[in-house]
Amino acid sequence: MAKKPGTNPKNEFVFFDVVYEDGSQRSNRRVPAELLEGLEKDEPARGFIIEQDREIAEKSGRPPLAIKSLSRSGAKKK
Image (cartoon, rainbow, N blue to C red; front, top):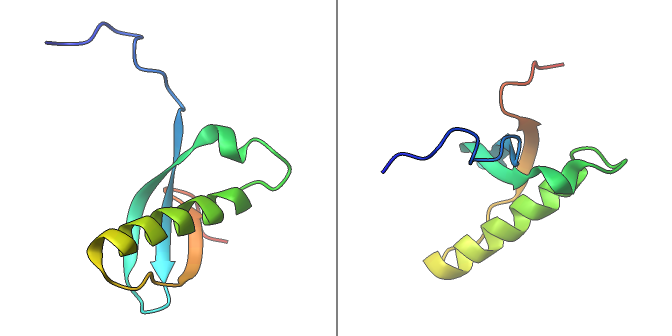
């Protein structure tokens, strides 16, 4: 069944591209927008994604990968 327009809140998540130390990349990792409202800008996203990776690693039985770089999806490179 289709949803009514306006029932899905917009800007609920911010998407990030993550590059790991081994050279692999994961795109569009979701981070709640409310975490990024403070003065730290995107730094809380790193902690949130590290925690997600730790949980995924526990379930899969593999060690978590170290994050090399983190940037917002679609953001221009500096």
